Length: 380
Ligand SMILES: Cc1cc2nc3c(=O)[nH]c(=O)nc-3n(C[C@H](O)[C@H](O)[C@H](O)COP(=O)(O)OP(=O)(O)OC[C@H]3O[C@@H](n4cnc5c(N)ncnc54)[C@H](O)[C@@H]3O)c2cc1C
Image (cartoon, rainbow, N blue to C red; front, top):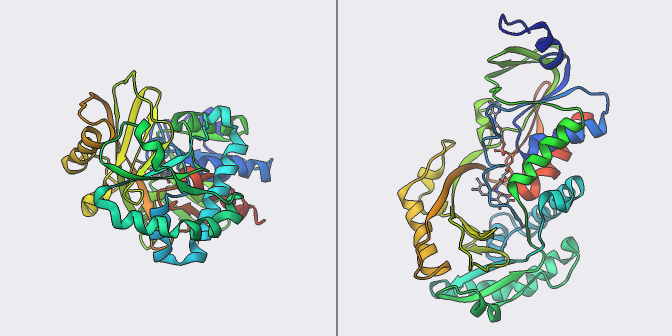
């Protein structure tokens, strides 16, 4: 590494001598870094993040500690079959367990509130299908989740929630919620405490495999590392255009504080494409990507009238009927999807590995993906 603006101290302390360089400081990149230090305590590990804060999905999500609503799981089974569904639910469930074990429920503000799937009058066919398949889903997933009654009818609880036009409600008794901001803060703190160097504002512009090392190009010059892990999720095709990684943007809004709000749980609608929950006294609502899939298949941040109007309409007519609270926050984040439900965790080039594409479920799968990446790079 040689760059006129870099001091000897900066070069010596922060920008050279790494065994492992991880690109991307989302949940996957940070957990991979922490687990690498656990497996190889003497390895020098650095995480390079292009933005001030991780800028993909990990600080933008809804904080559902979930493994899928009934309709979502049935749709995923239609795509990949029962064995693939079991495998992905196991990865989500074990990933959540790993994350909770690593950081602790207090740091995450993890709440085992239960998840609820709503069916409106126009969703009668979907509701009938889900209710018919409940015994099957419970039996299929009981060995993974460790309880027989994962999904059950909760329609009797609807009157207390103040929702309008909802005919049926299913409960997922094993679902929870966590605080996304606290999760990422705890991961960054844990990474530094484990001896990982995390550098922000460091976009990696190119990777150049050499003999026995990989050259990592950044605006501050080049770093050399024995191994590089791409934890760049939806942005990975910048480096490997052939990867089966399709971006999917998710838009979210959060209302002003609503003193009388009481919506315990996490709520799913329309096969998981739309979701909401209470955060403090505010309502967080997101989704709607399926309304305009072509526009939302982008790595660019942005809000669109189509999705925002849909979310607001749902807010005004179903979730808080007749009310029009002020929207204090609106943002978007970008997920990565592919034909298979499993993430990509494999070598991509000599010395370069990938751990990416959590298919919109990285709160659940991220820590497990990071763990598998650390194991892969340590040769375990
Ligand atoms: C709106 C929304 C809601 C969601 N809700 C949930 C939920 O409730 N539950 C759930 O389980 N999952 C949810 N997800 C999905 C979850 O957030 C992701 O699957 C997870 O965060 C992916 O983590 P990651 O580390 O793989 O990727 P990311 O968090 O996207 O991290 C990739 C990082 O790489 C960085 N990067 C990219 N290119 C470069 C480069 N060239 N150089 C340096 N750095 C680079 C990016 O800035 C980014 O920080 C949601 C996602 C969104 C967008």
